[in-house]
Image (cartoon, rainbow, N blue to C red; front, side, top):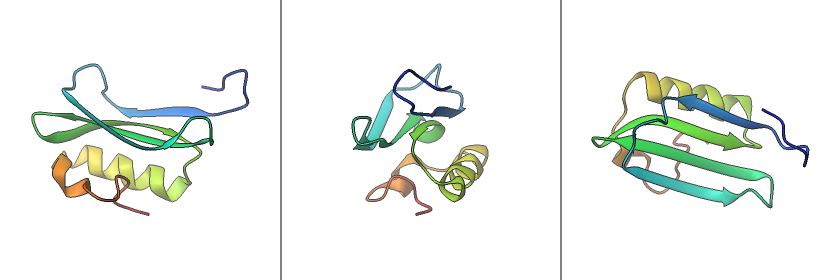
Length: 79
């Protein structure tokens, strides 16, 4: 998804059901990462300006239903 500001926003996993959202960076800076948790597990992520390596790592963590707390400190967990 590309908006009028020239930013590419990507969503991974299922962000339709979550009770926890953690983010780092900012949309204004063009460098945003938000992770979504449900029942203590990583279920999705939203990225802006992240590398393909970070995005691939997030996809793997989502598929593995990684514990959300495992990402504390550095949300990407793969940077």
